[in-house]
Amino acid sequence: MFEYGVMPPAMFLGMIIFMLYGFPVAFSLSAVGLFFGFLGIYTGHFEYAFMQALPLRIFGIVSNDLLLAIPFFTFMGAILERCGLAEDLLEGTGKLFGAIPGGLAYAVIIVGAILGAITGTVAASVITMGVISLPIMLKYGYNPRLATGVIAASGTITQVIPPSLVLIVLADQLGRSVGDMYLGAIGPSILQVVIFLLFILFTSIVRPQDVPALPPEARGELNTALVLRVLWGMVPSVVLIFLVLGTLFMGLATPTEAGALGVVGAMALAAMHRRLTWDLVKQAMHSTMTITSMVVFILVGATCFSLVFQGMNGGLWIEFLLSHIPGGALGFLIFVNIFIFFLAFFLDFFEIAFIVLPMLAPVATALGIDLIWFGVLLCVNMQTSFMHPPFGFALFYLRSIAPKTVKTKDIYLGAIPWLGMQLILVAIIIFWPESVTYWLDKAPDVDLNTIKIEIPGFGNDSGNNQMPDFGLPPMDGAPGQGGGAQPAPGLPGMPNFGEPPKINP
Figure 1 (tube, rainbow, N blue to C red):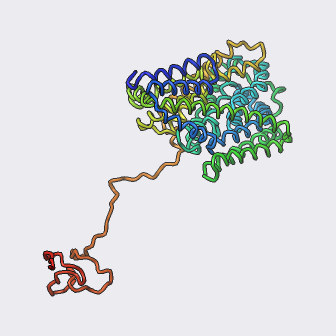
Figure 2 (figure 1 turned 60 degrees about the vertical axis):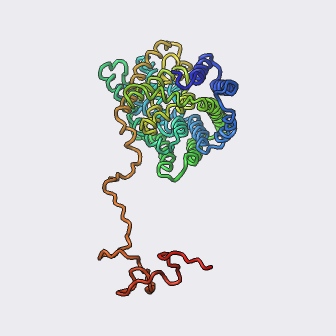
């Protein structure tokens, strides 16, 4: 425990105490880092020279081009969130699937996945779908626990589906490409949606009374006009998604450029629906400013904390503790995921990514774990932070807009099955890494035993190892050049090193 001194565990404990006290995370990290930094300088556990790197590290944060993608994708999502696109998608898709048991739940999951890909914010997805779908579900006989659970869970898909802000932060902290992180998240995103849909299908078979079909007067007539209405709300959004992610995957744009392209596309989409107003743009800018400022301040605080923590050999302390867990890499992954799961009760995903991930990444690298797979795995785990009763943010968002007839107990109990399905996905990714790595570009397989390195020699095919003449005429006395004549004692104009030196008096 104290192989590297008492300061690293004391610093870690101090951070936990500040977190539990409820002080803002960004300022808690800075305060703990600076306090222990000066304390370490006084006690001789920390070198003063480390502090000289702090201004440069802060400047590196605010000048990081990769982090510039966060405000772009946030602004894109805020525009699409407020332009009424979600309402059109939910209403049309709900009527399209309304004739089958669980149709509204299917619609919420599908629209939640689409909104996750175009807005990137859990709050927007949960609140929008809750306002529109929850009253209709309750009105037509859906079980309140299932209705609230499917709405909250579908909103959390946002964290895994590209272009997620969490994946950008994870790529930055792990030193990996955002495009590779997005490619790695495609498989788990699809699996998450499929698991949710299969659960609704199972429920509709076992307990059809919990997910009844909509009556004809509520869903309307299934005709060409309804299909076209759904396509009008869905196709432009899907085109925007493929436009943003496609340019990123093909290497035509950086994450920042893809985000800027997404902003232009989102404003064009809002204009197509005749909902692009100056008031909408101002609200989107305010939301973007709030989220971006929060991320930057947390990152600055985490940088201050990690600088002092690493300077006191805290990284070696963490690596020593985690590398001695029984079970090798598998034991490490199981422990880390249990640790993240419980840590998510109290911390937001940004805080976990900035505080905990820099401590875990070196250990994962030492154990030979692929960091893209590791990052996607933690991303799937961190989305459970939104579903944890009683601290899940998605549950708070849903409680704020749910009618008073829906009890808080029903919201919490309804979240438990969906939380279990998210943990099932974590287990699938651990034991089936190809669910992440299959989508990544693989380097060509090379058998090192078949590689031959040939260096041309100075001899000819006959085995006569003589110096090449390079097309020059033979020189008298050169070794091997005199035909049958005896070689001269040396090259013309060169001293004869075969004789002892002569000293002239």
